Amino acid sequence: VQESRSRFAQLQELCTVAGDKVSLAIGMAAVATEAMYSGRAREAAHLSSQQVALLEVIDDPTPTMGLASVAFCSWLGVCEFDKIA
Picture 1 (cartoon, one colour):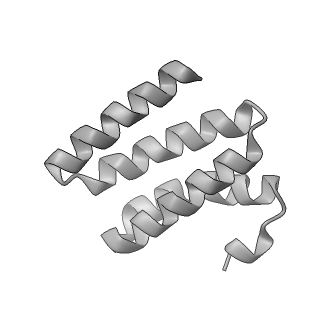
Picture 2 (cartoon, helix red, strand yellow):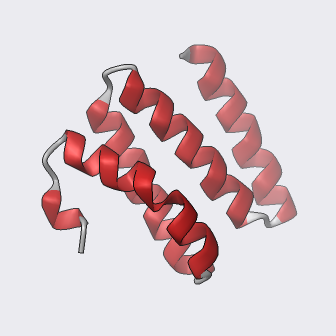
Picture 3 (cartoon, helix red, strand yellow):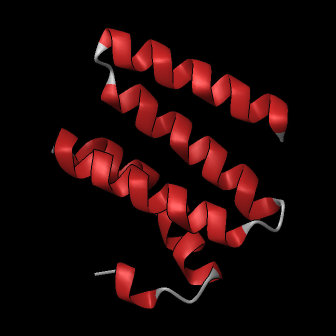
């Protein structure tokens, strides 16, 4: 877990410097998926909420649709059905 968090922090830094929000959103999906499959549903749901907020800023339906399933599964895992709207 610690190794993937440090790798994600490095990805965040690189994406911020490059201004690459799409790659950051993809990386967030990976971290949320890892959290979800590791039994850390709340962490996965929180990351998914941050990811969806980032995707809304990007305003491109392609990555939004491609990454939506991770967010939906994360929110369903913690019964946050109101997020799916």
